Length: 315
Image 1 (cartoon, rainbow, N blue to C red):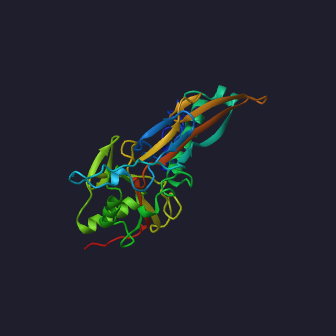
Image 2: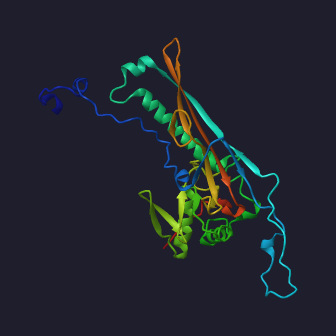
Image 3: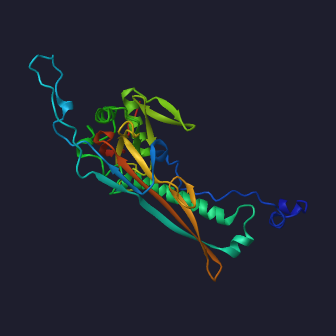
């Protein structure tokens, strides 16, 4: 006879479970990120979905005249400041999805969490994740694909070193706002700083701690892919690191969104009820409208093809 056979009889776990009021959480979406990039950008609302970026035409203007001592025969320089005749126009892009919900399920199983609200919340989070990825990677307006060729540099050693970050600062020296890098790249930069004995300082934003270099925060984002992936299995891999100036007054980068949307839920994002079909399926149409404009070439610089797989062994 085993010891368990002598134990006093009691209510079993499985039976008791049927009467228990289980404490539950809302649905946890493991792939969500803090999405720091939209928070650090300045945003401008649009009324028509179009944004025209007017620039001064390159060439001689009165501003190029040298200041000199006036003389009796000196002439006041004449001219005018010309503009580009075909400025670039940005059209807001849309990211959309449709959420279908069985109204019978929503009726029966909406306590303690409303099923419709939960489905819409999770769909909105997915759209915002896609939006941040487009701000970085879109061929039309993304930071990586629209950085001027003169603002692209290569790493000196192949790894993200303090020297490389200083080179980026030399490209965006007019009031740089933040670095943007994959968490793997930030870790690799931290290792290089530790190797040199210059650990980066930290600063607090939005209740979180960020590493800095020369006082400029290094903002993490998994939308700057490593070997084309958010979370590569290998410790090694290549990625890019950005330095960004943001703000219209600083002639930096500017996030664009559509204002006054019907059914607006958050900035530039609308949720519209499409109705219920004969099978009792309710549909909701979700769209986010956004773009990004680089107002001046020197507002963004990119450190290309950075290797994040360098490690050191210390005695």
